[in-house]
Image 1 (cartoon, rainbow, N blue to C red):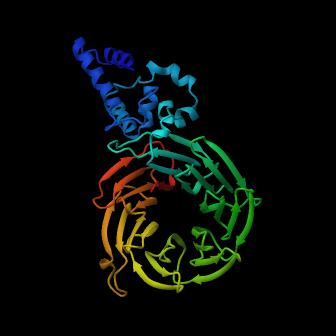
Image 2 (cartoon, helix red, strand yellow; image 1 turned 90 degrees about the vertical axis):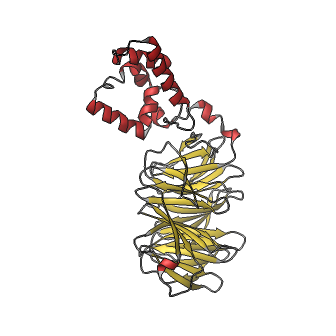
Image 3 (tube, rainbow, N blue to C red; image 1 turned 30 degrees about the vertical axis):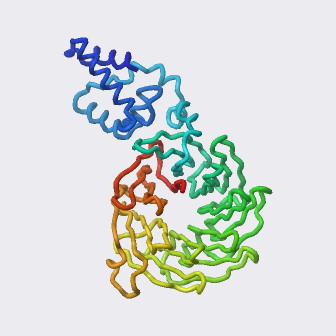
Length: 411
């Protein structure tokens, strides 16, 4: 790469004749490639053209130079044979060997899925603002709608609108999968006890299907919702399922009888997001109406409704112990709410803080309330980690090329 850079300087910058000055330029380029803090490129290894073109900021830089100076107009000439030999799929989705083999070096992780069916895995490395991707696996032939991870055993269960459920063993990269017999069905959300192989799946028909992954059989269906089941949570010990749907209802199901135990009403539009704390037996849900609701699952009643003007919630994370809620929306903001306010008070009294994540549309979020950090995924392909208190940008995770659907981090 140094030789290619020197060749470029000599052929494209003829006004620089001093060998010492040429050497300084090459050295500066090499240092920028290796700088872990800057990490201009997705990875430091391999074809330099691929690395430059993989970087969104570098692509913008190239376009500007091509338009104004023409000094990189022949940037492919030096490495054209490499481009002819590399397949498009390999160019886009390969993980450098040194990064792939570094899997065992880390214990803190972020994973995300996208509309192209891929699952990405990155380590969270203190001091490294742009960590390398160590796994990049295509698991679905359509958008991967949701996933959960057993971080102790590094196994993930994913579901997609291609009517497919995967058990993905991340380290070995082995996959077990199950499809339902209904071709026009899609899975929109998942909750799983990965260790025992029990999986709950929300469908576009509204039904919730219970899968035993050890036998690869669907053992029951929870019938109640009449439209897309968008989110669910399961307490496998209490045999309790909580779900929300586009039919505007929040449902409680008994797993033992596979029956609807209670229907919570209050929303007047499609429900999109849900989070549940089974220890305190409270849940929070949001709908397409610029408000969210806090529910008492023991008494099966609405505790309070909160207005969120201009902030239509796509995803949320509940800290029931401290009465906090984080919400994310199309406005690119993550808002922190205090749920201990009195009913009837103005919405400003509940709103505590807003973090600008600089996304066009934040579609997924995960919060670690103990460590004070959150990770977001967006419609504009970005996955980022932030300080929950200060809003400081901690990490940016490169690789995705399509709209994101879900994000999780180890806790």
